[in-house]
Each structure stands twice: as C-alpha cells, then as structure tokens.
Length: 189
Image (cartoon, rainbow, N blue to C red; front, side, top):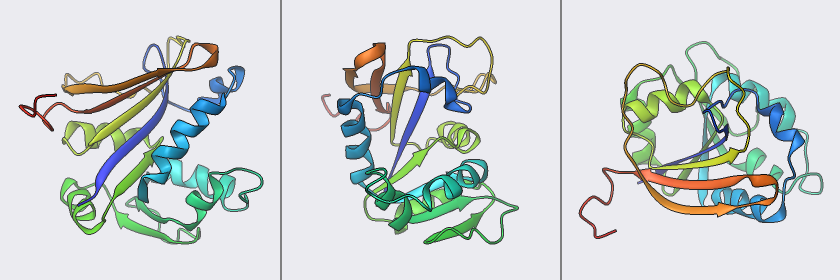
C-alpha cells in the first residue's frame, strides 16, 4: 500500500502559495539531500491541476545535469487530480478526475511505495481534512508574509500530527517532518 508524502515550502505564518519568496534564501546541500531522499523514497507523484500545469513546462525539458531532481520528475508516474484537464501532455501522466477521497484511497492501494506531493495546496488541504496524508514535510522559512494561500484551512478543520524529525539549514530554514497522529497511536513512539 502506498503512503502519501507531502512536501511544502511554507512561511512562519503558513503561506504556501507561489514560493518565489524562497529565492532570497540559500538552498544548502543538506536541504537538497533531504528533498532528494524524500523523492527517492517515492514511486509516484500526485499533483493538483495548477501545480501540474506549473511543473510540466518547468521540468519536462530539464536534464539530470541541470537539476538532479529532473529524472524523478520526468520519468516517474504522475497522477493529476483535475476535473477539467483532459490531455496532460507531460510523459507518464494520468488524469484521475476531480478530487474524491475514495479515488485517492484507491491510488494508495494500487501503488507500492511513497506517493510524492509537492505544492498542490487545494489538494493537500482536502487530503489533510480527509486524513489521507501519511507524512507531511514542511520546509519552514523564517518569513511572515501576512497574506497568501495557507496550508491549513481556516474552517475549523483539525489536523493532529506527530513530529517525527527536525533539521535546520542555512538561512534559518527548518525541515519539520510529521506523520498523522492517528498512525502509530499506541505504538510506543
């Protein structure tokens, strides 16, 4: 059974939209290794339509020499949650339709290994609300934007998580790893 592993760049005040604000911070090698390990532990990508439409032109022409993540992004099976996208065009991409928890659960049952999710805020918020996220990897930047699309909805939905790791990087960036608090409850962790 697959596990959904979400990776987000996020500000101190929870903003995850277009992360151009990350450009002012160093991307240190340890951070790249952590993201590479997360990708390397996955056998599929799951993306929302908007993120897919941003990633496809950005990644499809890249080579491993340009970015070590390019082979994973281009060669791995990609599943897109969208009610409107018809022809994804990016190699190894399949549109699975609009968001439905049972469709995500079915995908988890069909895939052996991790299912990598990056960005895709609307999709991630829905999966968090439905308890479908197994791991949440937040790369927290020491910045508060005051406005923007946030990871956690302000609708009163609760997401209980258990911290599984913490690592700091140059520029004050912190990688916080979580798993669903429901997983491992009573496991002595």
